[in-house]
Length: 356
Image (cartoon, rainbow, N blue to C red; front, side, top):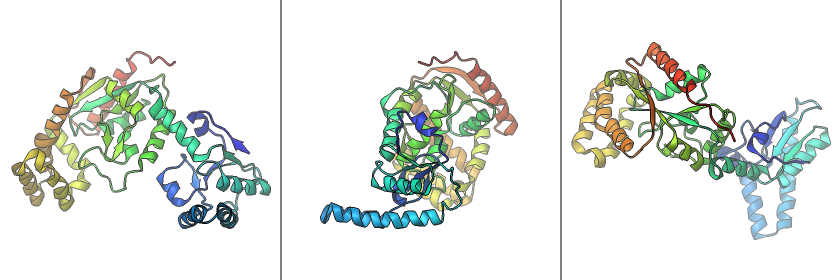
């Protein structure tokens, strides 16, 4: 039995007990429905083998071999991952396009007595709904962007705002990157498709009638590209300008970026890429501070000689409306809590959003 979903919220709020992705591990790793578990009926090598036979020998032979592989894998999953489920369990199953892999697996689950259904159109249907949300229609949400120099604790403030009940979207968290040359995290960034899935899910959980606070970003976060509908809304978003003294920003960044600041070899490798932009003398000066272990001196120099000038240049090209300024004299917990309270008040004073 195939279940059709006509909107992304309908699919994300499917109401089933478990979502099962029966595609290969490689397909699952690239992207999958939020919350899905991977019970592949063909592993990466088997999928490649069946595909080769289909193209080079015979579609019938490929289907026959594939069916044998699928049933063996399905039996294994029933005996292991699914053995604890009772008779009333309701799984929702999908493969690439709702075809043989998910259909065969769902048939077996239903024969056992479980109330299994398959997603009509499979993963491709899900991707069409994600694309419609992020590429095809204007974003329904009204955004307010936190703007300011590097080190004004924008990401930290977003999470403090969420704790106060303010709607926010942490793009850097979803992209797995801190949004600058030195922003790479220990875990690799998600694929572009997985990033878009996370974005679409996060947006679906936000009330379009209430403002959403985000961080002012460029069109890319690391290697991930912000999709067009969201990027258009971000460019039009009014700004809250954050201001903090460079001494406070230095102290904050030394703590926030201690991981990369402690890796001198990696720092020099990355900063060497800036010689064409900042010149040899400037970069050599950064290297001397790295060799001396002068984290505060390096951090301040990077802001004064690279990040702040780059910010000033980028803002000259942007005509976004600034609705208020928020000063942060300190960036410790008390100072950030005060700033979050002030931002909350500003956001609450904004006119109500119109939802069509």
